[in-house]
Image 1 (cartoon, rainbow, N blue to C red):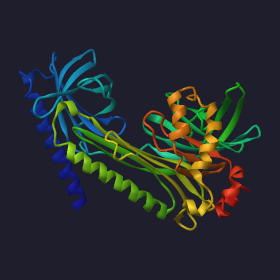
Image 2 (image 1 turned 45 degrees about the horizontal axis):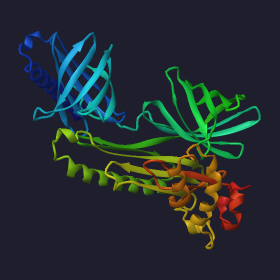
Image 3 (image 1 turned 60 degrees about the vertical axis):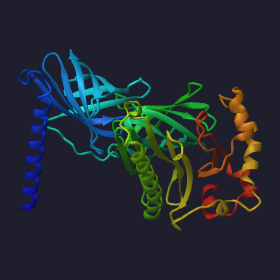
Image 4 (image 1 turned 90 degrees about the vertical axis):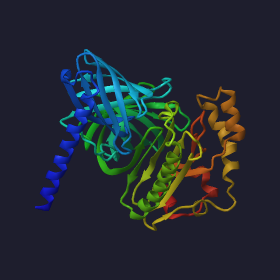
Length: 437
């Protein structure tokens, strides 16, 4: 009985709040009785942050409100709607213009572009009409996942670790004929998967495309750069849920997605790092968000993501990346976790004492990177040959992947060295024995 009473009270509160907000927005018009259009919308801006939108129209002018649902930061909106197209100025509590919202009403949905004052920052907003103001955020990990697929056909076996991100974007790693390939792509409007496979030095291998309506079982064509096409049948081996942190207010925003595995110990380790990063972002956000300077609107940004290179009962490996506009929160963490011992594998667990990782990689990349698309760039070549260190290592199924820290110009460069080429430097660890069988 108490449960149903609580639900009724919550409904009445939301209804009362919506009515109060409706009255407040109508009162902004010269003649509130002429308002013939007042609708509520809910969705996301920048693919992550939940927002609620209220729009009212009197035939000439449009007024409304935009609310970030987690921070409860509110902006007023003023402008025009013509033939379902709208152009609105965003105003803060002091009446200062802080940005603009330009979009279109399509049936019961809205697609719009938000831009700051000087048009240097833009974000996409997609919203759906609601019957009243819905001011509660949803879990930002919804409709995101990490899936492991195994595809077979034409004498081939292809394993995919696919990460679905916002806006139907896909990324991950593929293992084919004893080699690893990184890939990126999307799920298009036809529900087709389209991903492009590349080597670690950014050379194209080919494209994988196929009908993805059934995400447990599908067929796709692997089309190599030379035009050779082979059909494979994929079955879902395992799907992981995704955790997520998001926040946005007047000045700042940050977001992070990360997988939730079957290993409680790994999840605890990852959770601590994620929470420490998020707290650091919150602390910085508090410092800068006191300033209601319209020139600073949405200027502070931080984001993080976790890629998976191997996920099995014997090994969980991958890379955590953190980046921010203020720089101090930038870092990368490679991880190699043994689920059986519930321990992270260190450099000393894998490599013999005499292995000089940086010296070894430096000698190799001068040869390997001559095939990189950016090798003709003198600054890139100088960075790779002289300044770039490769401090991180990730155990993959085809060798050990060494990578640099993130570079603002060239990203995070990496190279995979086969196990046999590292044989003299590797300890006889149980995980390596299984991978090299």
